[in-house]
Amino acid sequence: MVNHESARIIQVFDTTLRDGEQSPGCSMTLPEKLEVARRLERLRVDVLEAGFPASSPGDLASVKAIATLIKDCTVAGLCRALEKDIDAAREALIGAASPRIHIFLATSPIHMEYKLKMSPEQVLERAVAAVRYATQFCTDVEFSAEDAFRSDRDLVCRVFGEVIAAGATVVNAPDTVGYAMPEEFADFIRYIKTHTPNMEKARLSVHCHNDLGLAVANSLAAIGAGADQVECTVNGIGERAGNASLEEIVMGLRVRKDHLQAETRIDTTKIYTVSRLVSQVTGVKVQPHKAIVGDNAFAHEAGVHQHGVLANRATYEIMTPESVGIPQNRMVLGKHSGRHAFEERLRDLELSLHDALVEQVFHQFKVLADKKKVVSDRDIEALVIEASASAPETWKLDRWVVNCGSTLSSTSTIRLQHQDGAVAEQAAVGTGPIDAAFKAINRIIGKEPSLDAYELGAVTGGEDAQGQTLVKIGLNSRHWNGRGVSTDVVESSIKAYIAAINAMEWELAATPQP
Image 1 (cartoon, rainbow, N blue to C red):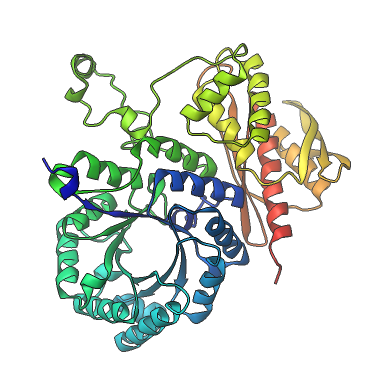
Image 2 (image 1 turned 90 degrees about the horizontal axis):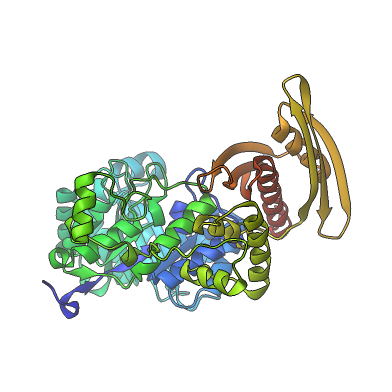
């Protein structure tokens, strides 16, 4: 068994807010990004990639806000190997306690020929110039050779050697399209380590995608071959089939430290709550059988399994639920519970709120407790995320009425209160009660965003379960999410739509228009 002192420390580079957030359906509002960033900081990731500042004014603003907020880990901004992108990253990271400029440029033949239309020599020249330019503003510069695994190995080594000489502190070898097998990716990493000039002066990172379901396996194989940093996302969210899953890599290193002789600084007891938050704010559910954080990860139904676990948990569990922060204390909360018990449960669930929000959520909890016999942890999580991760309320629901049936048209009357105190009311006819309600809201706000996605689910089981609705709206090629919870599914849908409208109104007002 390897002792603590002899294990290498692997840096965890989390890109949930960049690579994860840019995947279809995973966009987040700024308040949601800030809450995820706070949780990642408490999780103790080493590097938090906050976004791609040059991609939009909104992304630049969000990276700037995160960089100002986060103090206990490095905040990175992604950019192409272009001076204008690097300038945007510099502007976004100006308030960061520990900033990193992350530059990427493809090195594979197919990318160079068809996407970049550049020769290998031109790629080398561009990469070195970009890194040299970035080092004028930031001492921590990472260079990624996009699609490195499908590139000529010697070209990757040459580019890495030159950018390190130009000042890069980290070089990243991604398997951008998830093509590698673990044994060949390990061999690739060993080759880069031993054939790159000046490699001892920089950290070697890997960034694996999951197109063949091997992102975590390839990441762990790379660590075994000498990689110093691993890039990953919470729940493995990301482009196409996703990225390497943070929780699986971290727990793989923890449980098999004897084999890999490496570990991280991650506080694993916070993994579960971070996973739940990311799932809630993106609306992307974690499948029940997902390793580490799925609902069934520590569930045992088969009789032989149950017998073994009751005799000794190690018979079928190679880690404890507590080690990843899955709560075991199930103190029942209901309408007679006081604020002290409620706040204690918030602490158990790693749900930190300022006093005003605690009062607001506690009030909502008491209202819900009057409707349900028992309020579950998931109910509380839903209430907290609805309150804390939402955009400021430009519009607030005052009251609503719907009429529907099999022999009459669905109608809805909605009354909203504007933040300036004015009240507006409109009625509309729709194909169903929810469609009618959304149309009435559109009449009030004077805009007609598209409804790109609508998802309705139950927070828990039972006839008194809260309905949780996620909607995604679009306007002028931009998109916003909203969520709402209520024991009435029509009300949860209306609240979700208004939350998305508020996110839209707030971002359009806050973002400079071209």
